[in-house]
Amino acid sequence: MQIMSKPRILYVDDEEINLSNFQMAFENDFEVLTAISGLDGLKLFKTHSDIAVIVADQRMPDINGVEMLTRIYKSDPDPIRIILTAYIDPDDIILAINQGHIHQYINKPWNIERVRVILNQAVEKYNLTRENKQLLYELADKNRALKSANQQLADDLDLRERLEQKNREAEIKMMSQAKLASLGQIATGMAHEINQPLTYIKIVLESTARDLTEHNLNEEELQKDLQESQHQISRITDIIDHLRTFGSNNNNDLEQVSLPAALDGALILFNEKIRRKGINLKLDIPNQLPPITANLCKLEQIFTNLLQNSIDALEGTVNPSISISFQHKNNQLVTKFSDSGKGLGIDTPEKIFEPFFTTKETGKGTGLGLSIVYGIVNELKGSIEYQAPPKQGCSFLIYLPVSTD
Image (cartoon, rainbow, N blue to C red; front, side, top):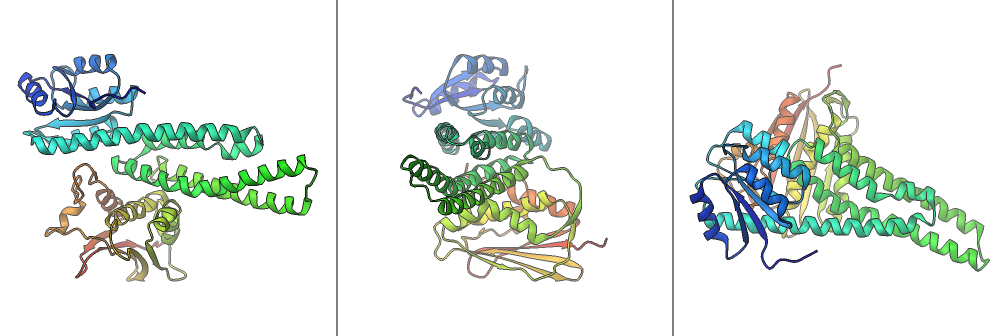
């Protein structure tokens, strides 16, 4: 891959003064390409490679910014897409997330330094995406080498195909950009989780091949190794199957669901990350909790968003901990989710459930995670409250009605 001296950015706007101002503001930091319309922007994108970031005005005379970015996404999903607009329309926001996979909105008039920070973070995200793809290609090469040893085992260890399929399903079926971000971070933890059983199986295969060559095969030891290998394969299958379930386009079918089972599903995706970061996970789960009428995948998404937020908030803290408890009270299941992180530090806690509200640094959060949690809880005729502990951290209380069937 050719490395450019400056990251390449495409800016599309139907006002020449805006193009000129953007060029002058950022040409020292980036290689800036400009286009006067959405159609011109598409032509420039087709004729230039390695465009890291595309910034587009939403309202343009030929095709709008979301339509242009949607077409670009279908041909190349890697460049980071940003919409620039003076009009915040909720319908435009939903369309941008679902079709254009927009990374961020920038409001007009824009602040040069804020936009510079957003552009730098977008370039960094683009570079990480390309690096991750290269790592996936390298992992696929190693898996293909393992296939030659045992074709049946390769059917279960073909991680490249499974992960690529999972990514395609997640891209199509995700509820929001926040879910995409969560899947990306979860996948990092899964690599560590899967690597250990893969390493064990590889060692068993190499050792067995050596014993066969040296006519030194111990059938009793081989039987034990094969049994443990089968156990490790089942472990990989469980992890991958759960990733598939989490990323699928779950329907709205309701069933009798155990709330602790939904938490267990989310923890399958986060246990390794929690362990590596030294987070003390405290669970208080009473026996024989009544079920609730819900969709299991959506309940798992509640815990997934809360876990991800807490892990981010605990970064750099001393003695990090997450506490989760369940209680049956007044015909409701009450979930208390707390962490010892940095807290939100806001005077208007009701805003935390609004779409695109975030206390993270610019470019590091979409502000959609808690909004999605709020929407799912309300859909289940429940409620959610935010509590700020006296010192630090934060707590959420979730009330969901127990099943009456």
